Image (tube, rainbow, N blue to C red; front, side, top):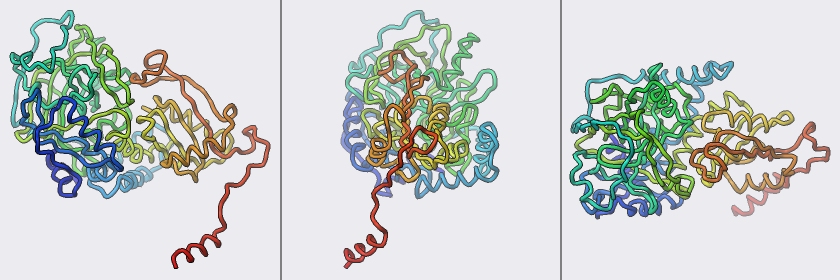
Length: 509
């Protein structure tokens, strides 16, 4: 089902008993984080939280904050209007099987067709609720040669002269050592200056002052590629950031879609209704008409980069300051009844674990199209998204596990995976204890492991060089002839089925 607003989704969560309303004032400085972290650490992800009176520097914001709205398997399914994510994945998988592709390019083309089967492509409309309130922001008049120190967020008087409503938004300071406040669920719209292809991504944004913020796009991201072209051309890069609207927007922004495939097409497919887009007030980018907040701006390639961070990240550690582009804000628009969506990241499990798990389930049919021997894939919470991946396969020939490792390392964000463990088809990859049992039982460390090199996550503090690292693959499958194993492979201990049935009957009596 399509949600016409973020508030519409929140009310649905409330009716389903998946929401806790916090009526007393709670500070956006650290307190909301502590409250949300406790809820996210509960079994199954706890409940969504609606903080009705968030305070910014002690002043109650007119906009409530919603957090952990997709932090459980049930709420992820609800955001898709389904009983389960598996149900949605099965439907997409059946569409993809309508015409089996003969190669990767054809698979991507087929994915685009499958998404478009149910709904038309995003359509442009004249206006929408996101423009109920419009604030135009005066742009800087001169090029910046060096950046001043960011003002102290704890000192409200530092912002009295700022005209932008950005400072009035209930933006969180998540963790004690964070460099400031960060927008944590921004949907960032950019376009390729050469092809016009649109991209929807999610890159955290540090607030510097009333009309500028940092753009933390990592160098492997599509928006960063767009940015490099603008820098090469010496042209200002238009940027649009929106928050809220249908919950499928942030999900689509984080989904591992191939470069060039419009994320709004995926959002329309999942919400069972094409996405209505409106043109921004100060640039030619388009954003969902039903978004709660829209922040418009640009990046000036003639300006120096600015340090962004530290930030308590999904790795469980702080990301240290690094230079990134600055977004100058030219307009802020919002609904009159807007709700500010937020999330936090840190030591897992967090809300992002459930979002990532849903992405894996949804795109598993795509993986299987390229690797039909794959049975299932899991990203354990301890691996903070992509550091650790478990894969089960139907093994039929020697060294097949290594083929899977190399194939996955070559697919999108899987290039960041540090550890891949491959097990046999009968192993439940979602049961970490079961995977570890087979890992330790079925491997000889030297024979069954492989080291290689490749791109690393920019956020990985453990690599010797930023964005460059090594990877370890472990073959924990049963060894067969041709893999250097010449001894008989023993059977796994298993009770006789007749005996099990008899004891079941005795226990039932």
